[in-house]
Length: 507
Image (cartoon, rainbow, N blue to C red):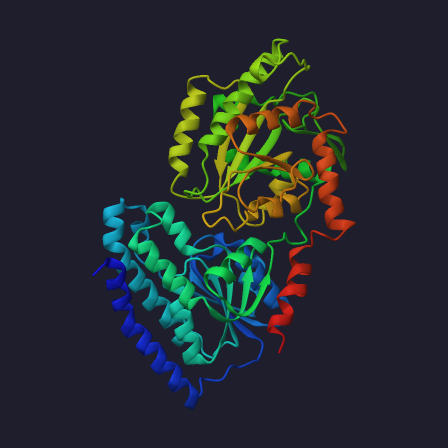
């Protein structure tokens, strides 16, 4: 008997229990909901690091729903959700969080225990810690195990309707760590497709995801595409706004954590000298109510990541090294890459900020530190940071260019970071994969690259006239603005939610 067959056998008693509970549900009534407009938003993860589900919560609250958030406690939630009388936070303990970081043999040994403990905590929360049965249970998937089976069981017990928000497939992420033909991955796929098949509605982040799930899981229920979109407050900052944000970061928050005033490497890199005491390395105050960007400022680039296996930051390090080589060549009156004969007065310095938390962050920081200590970069500096959810759009709104290194484990999901960047009028260089064209239109609102050399060349091309106006970056910003304001092809989160999700949950 194969391992896959053994796992199937172990699942049989659970399926029998599920069938019994379904029959029992036909002749009994769940505890009634206090309101037809109530929802439990289920995230078996850190809810503070799941912006899409936080946006769902905000939209439900705005539509008058009593909103229960069932999730692990982690990063701070937006203040408006913390203060809302319509939000009930149901935090569940994080079971054996260290297991995911263990070597593969130990991971396989302890993963079942982690799943069991997580399942029990989730079931207890849904079945007993929410006083009245919610009308809907909205699940973030992945993780599928144990979320999908447990939520289906809880919904059966309580008479709630299930909506699955398909961000990706859990088994494809697991395959990055194990292998696609692993019995564990095959079992995970079976669980996900079986328990994910039936729901009141399925929200898919892309057209590719919808097609894949309809083919692989034979979804039953209303299946719609619900693209990630930025909230309305995500926007490009004006000169004075950017100045205020940068001054705030310099004096109180982000840049102090980046050690601008304490790190010789960064302090000497950024020109803080100016006859105007109100200036920053990026902006200069021209009057009490106006500010301009400095012409000699570094280009401020940004990326966001969870430091997971589906993002290869070695591509970024290589591209930045190639950019630095080209910048040095331009500064000496020579061309750029590959002996180019093109001349330019200069390429700007780059300060690259990467936001997010995750297991791969420390190793990346060590690589950056080594390059800077050895003096390998003359025109490039990289720093990592974690921003409060309120500060993140402010930083994006003040940046010049975004970079996405996301690849899809399933080939069917899109990076929300790019959506956020577009919301702030920020063009993006994005790593190519199967469905990225649904979001990034090469040469229109950004560029698409396949290799580190591609990315380096794109940075050189986009930044070579920096900050001359109008540049290619300015034209791309105009395209992003028009798609949102003029053509209405890129809606805000609120507009998209009202159009797609609201009709599915209308009383």
